[in-house]
Length: 164
View 1: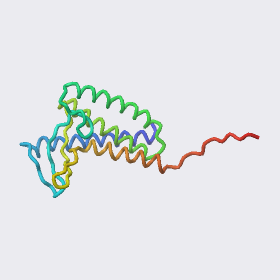
View 2: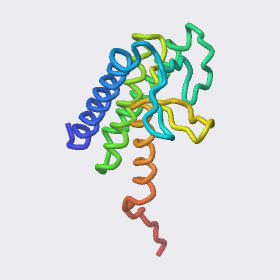
View 3: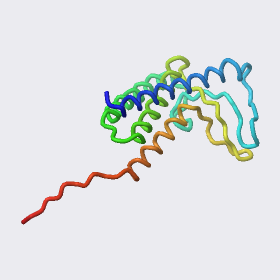
View 4: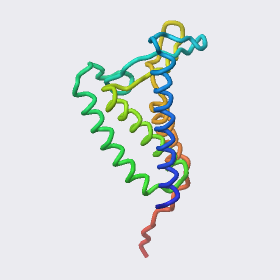
């Protein structure tokens, strides 16, 4: 196993661990009973259940959502793992590990709860960004790392065909 695969898998593991630990803390300690916990003038802890995808899209409480979205996420994770096996940089391995860990963290929620636990609520006055969680943050940061890697990593020179 290459060092990049080990790095990506380690990051995925710790992402899942951080995600599930924070969700457990929110469910078992903070939100008993569910409430809004103001932290700053622009950030609250809340408890929301997202049975859809990002930003609450398709959040129609359909019983099929958890199954369909979990199968889709696992399929994407398999693709990402094969990509990880070809990783050529720390940024690429880290980005893929974060996305894999975040996706699997949300799959675990769908398996246990039928929906994803979201609890981070940023807002400006009464305008609220959709609540999210650590897994969502991992996916976002991972995607940013992959974009950064694709834009700023040195590219091998392409073979030139020279006609004599």
